[in-house]
Image 1 (cartoon, rainbow, N blue to C red):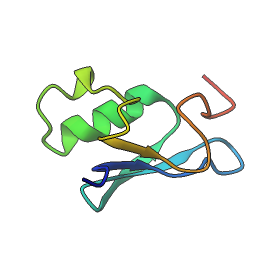
Image 2 (cartoon, rainbow, N blue to C red):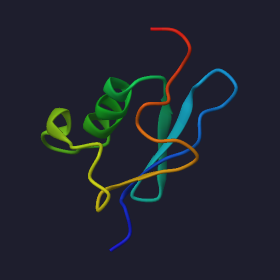
Image 3 (tube, rainbow, N blue to C red):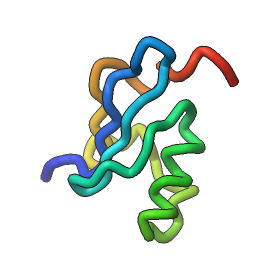
Length: 71
């Protein structure tokens, strides 16, 4: 099964494009943004999503430790 959530490589400022189920859902600068996008996309319990689960998330270009240069 392919990952449903794809988090693209960080841009020059650390922002990461996010796709869920083939649809662009936002540009994140922290994990909380990803969870908020999932909730807005209608996912129940988005705050509990394991962003390290390789069956659900595909990290491209860098892993979950690479985010924006600001808080």
